[in-house]
Length: 234
Image (cartoon, rainbow, N blue to C red; front, top):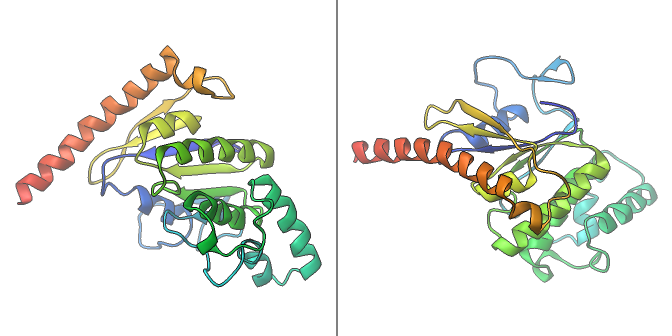
């Protein structure tokens, strides 16, 4: 991967997309080969790597600002410094005015922004995202996707993003990695050469439609293989 790149991983269910992320995160040790981060072989969780999951990972007993500052607390960052960093991050992710709300008082999209802010505030050089918008409606997904790209461009993170949405992958990515059905391997990496910012006119352009169709063609072939495999087993 390239520094500052947005790479999406897409593939049939069960092909190993989430496992790839967990290997990069240093959460899985039983695999062949090696993973290098910043020139060093990975031997476990790395401070330069942050991760955001699909599931709601906010702590229900902590407010927005308390959730976001959690990692800084664990690093024993002084309270005043934590709050200063949190204030900037809350503004960046568009949660100003909701600092003292509990997760139960926030929408699903807002809770995901809290989770993203909690990962970003630790200033990871690489951010891994495992279907972070999977439980959200299409409108919220697109809006949060646009916000995520703006934040990434401002902070310069490298992002590896797992998604089931072809449109989301094309909208957000510099490259889309399509995986094969089990056993999951890289089938093809599609370069997304759409201009930024990617507003409605870009996403609806002929080139965008062509890229979406290319990814779908690659994915459909593998999804059918996975479907046939399940049919044979039953």
